[in-house]
Length: 472
Ligand code: PHE
Image 1 (cartoon, rainbow, N blue to C red):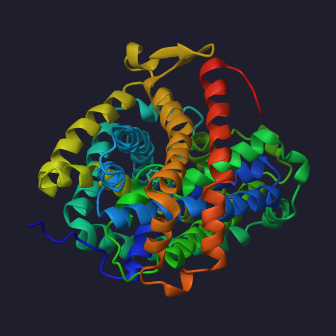
Image 2 (image 1 turned 45 degrees about the vertical axis):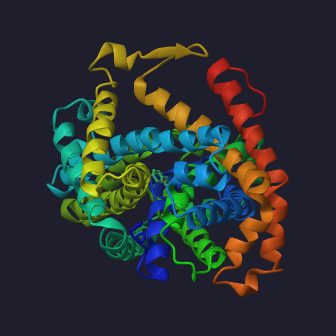
């Protein structure tokens, strides 16, 4: 006899946990950087369209697969395809994704935690020095920070679905919303903040080209935690009486709302620091914005509000992004945990095994920023030398994510089949039957969504590994 599968305790608990996964560094920093460089509201508009027209149906499909199968992604692919070996490969692909994304995300979360500790201990001046970040990532403290973050993730996960994941989300997500709101209000009171608000809210469509559109979709897909097995796994913890489509809409709205608010925090801060800034000169990378540019902006505040208040603002910002990253890390680590639990491991054993394997890979990444030559110049392709960390990002974010998305659409429509998807979505939600949403989900998943994901996949593979620009 099988033991009943653990479930989220309430609808709001699931929504907060899923939103906790979705809201991450991508929303708080990735989105504002992209909006700043690519026409402000013009980018926001395209991003929001992608979230609702392309990503939401995929999220609904993932959640339904999980709830139907009551299994982790590999188990779900196997069960719903009656053990087809071909579809097992898709399951395995989803399963290795959390290893790769979880590891690169862990590295950035560790840095965030380090900056939080430093800012809170009064070292903002040091953080704002131009060469600080380069020294920080290769200092031995990083290992201690890694240990603390890993312990936090494990402590949450060992509690299980309801007492671990859900409870942590119920504490951290409201705290996150409050901190975000407080920082937005604070930033809007700064001199010249309105220059940034205007820049953000007046769309500039001249910046939009095929590359920006491609980037917006990848960003939206990542931001909703799709293609990583997370929504399949979380779906397996939702009760049969819950409305999946309705909850997914709220998660997508929350995720977009947070991204929008983050733009309202970061862009005015940048313009208040330098009202004449040419946004083309900003770096594309979230990492350089968080760890190099923002500390400078916070430090500059000391002339108006004093060093202590500037440090408090910086600490609150790093705490905010750290919370967002932690709930995302929890969700991604739950995917392989659920697989091991299906294999008969206890949660504790599963987590120990994962900490060891993912931990080793994380340490290898930490060593790949110049400390160990073979990891720092790991391979070279498309004319560029890549570190292990770079390779992991290229393979997971740029390659496997769209591929997984494509396979999920194909699987749900052609193997599991529309009528089963619809039946699952109608459970607990009789109004779904015959609704616009149902028709849209069916139509989009069987036509343009897989097509678009295929194009993105081909485009990035050509660019990343062969240096060939097809579109962009
Ligand atoms: N949604 C997260 C973000 O926007 C992405 C993510 C989720 C990464 C889960 C890792 C784990 O940052």
